[in-house]
Structure formats: structure tokens, C-alpha cells
Amino acid sequence: ALIAADRHQLEQREEALRAVAESLLQQSASKSYPVPTIRFIEGSKIESFLKQETPKWLRALENLPEPVWVGFQDSTFASMHQKWIDWQWKIAPKSVSLNMLTNQSDIEKRLAGKYPKRSMRYAKNLGGFTASTWIVEEFVVVINTRIKPYYAYEIHDALLADNMRKLFKELWDKS
Image (tube, rainbow, N blue to C red):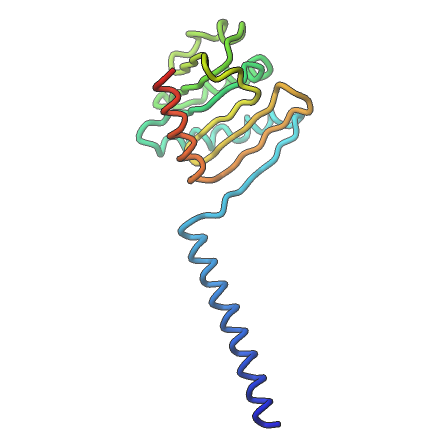
């Protein structure tokens, strides 16, 4: 009985040590590779979400050697959120510019040249974009303004954003 009690006590200690080791392993992994976070935004809250998060995104861009907001934009976004576009350029630091591939549209023709640091190119061989996808430093923002219900989501993931930025640069250079 004494040996069985010692064995049981030893098994409990081993289990506790395994749990501590697993916890330490997860903590060190999360410091090296932060776990991505995702936020979902309902359509009725997109405008307030944009106003709330834009300053954060602009500050994040300033960390880059080339502070460029890049991505793909469905032209319905510009039609629905032109007030936000105007506001965003009022608060954007002079160092920040924007490069987007977009659909050919009347709204983009009207906005062309209005903001010198806003560079839009038509995505000739990619077909029309059905959502806007922005890469803003370590954030990827997707906004659906084409099909109801409208929605947006923000992914905070430096690895995904870095890969998306590289893909965008390749497409931008070829457009």
C-alpha cells in the first residue's frame, strides 16, 4: 500500500510538471508568434468602426520604412463611405500614402486626383473586386459593401499581413 501511495503521488507530480511545461511552452510561443485576433463588425457599425480604428492604423503605418496603406478595393466602398475617405485624408500624416487596386467606376473617376497621395489603379486582369481588402501594417481589414448583409472584419496578424503586402506589391508592380 505504501508503494502504491508513493506511485500515485509521483504520477500526480508528473502530471503537474507536464501542465507547467505545457503552459511555459505556450507562453514562450505566444511571445515569439503572437496569436492572431479577429474582430467582426456588423454593417450598421462599419462607419463608427472606421472612425475609431483609422488613427490606430495610421500610427501603425508610420512604423514601416515605406508607410503605404495597400490593398484591393471594391468601388462600392468609395460610394458608400466617401465622407470617411475625405475625413481619413484630413487626419493622415503627410508621410502616409495609399496604393489600391480597384474596379473601374464613376466614383473613382470623381475621386481621381482629389488626394495626391491616394493612388488607385484599375485591376484589368483580375476581374471585379467583390470586397475591399486592406493591408495596414500588421492588420488585414476586409469590408463587404457589395452584398447585404454588409460587414467588416479586422485580422491582427503580422505574418498574414506581411505575406499579403508582398503579394499586393507583386500585383501592383505588374498592373
